Length: 488
Picture 1 (cartoon, rainbow, N blue to C red):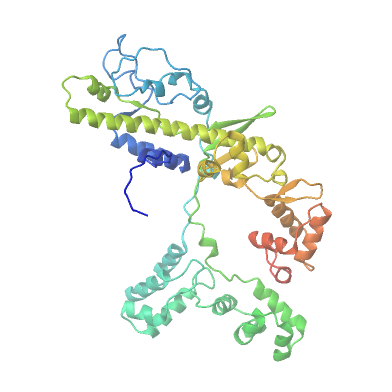
Picture 2: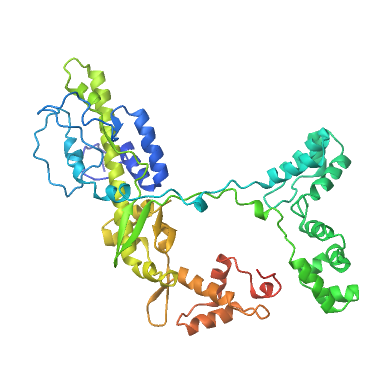
């Protein structure tokens, strides 16, 4: 067969990810605070954009005339808005009035938030500055000694503590950095180990427990000996072997074991809350009568419009081609940003309304009535792809009558109950947590017993599933709960 070259035409469609389309998709994933930063950045970089404030004049093109309508404000119209019949006065290369006209008629949602009488943040919602473990120890070091060398070694030791308060560096390594001997470092380590919290700067859990026991002027010698000589048997709960080796009654050993169980294995635990933050809800759900209303949080998001002064350059005969191209590019970017922000807000509103419709029982009666929900369910309800639902619910929080939740929280798999209905996995976890919270401390329930208890409530669930949910809740197995200290 002879080889020959041919030309042929083929028609096809494909999605091209233009920079503007990428920007619109990115805006869907931003939280309200992140959206504020993006808009503020665009205000600085794009001269075509300006913020509408109460002091902003209606137009920046000069005196308003019959041929120069006031500059439109930022809230773009929806696809359902009828086309405007107003005569176009701006001779632009494309029609932007169709995107931005009639914006003044769309203030209903914004007014619900802006006109609401808002109080200042409650005092208890303002996060206090929590001191870190390093700062807490540095302060004690300053009061403990005035020796410059000791302070330098102590600062190096404190700097090598992990978040749990354990020393994660060798003495020789610290000595080399501070240009001192290992014996000097060891003395400073003993000094730091005497600081609060007890057990800090230990190099192992065994040393940590010993430091806490010896902080007592009269420590229990049996407890000390158990940790020093029988720590491996203690960690494996071989209490009979310990009793035989120490030639003591088992009851006496268990008294010491109970004391040891009450010690803190992570001294730095109470200093680990430095990453706390105040969450600003992106959406509010209010109950008005018997119905729920969804209101977007637009506080801090500037209202934008196109700057008429720069727009007039497109109509000025003396403007050069380069200037017009620059203005046209910035105008397209400004209009796309306005449209993208508006689309993001409308999509977020639709998704939240759909979630409220599916989770009505949860809003009315609480966590135990949270129903299974998937991204596809919401997507089919509002006519959007589930990938869009996933993006718009990322890093978004909603304030409801039941509390503050992440939008992703409402999407969970389901487990079939005895009557054929699906129960959310979150509700099942809550049931497991309630069952274990009410158990007898002397006889903790096994995973199989919990599964049987759930079966009596109409939920058939495997033992391994109970174990999985228990681990996700951070609850120890039954044999460890029997000896673990209970919260008072």
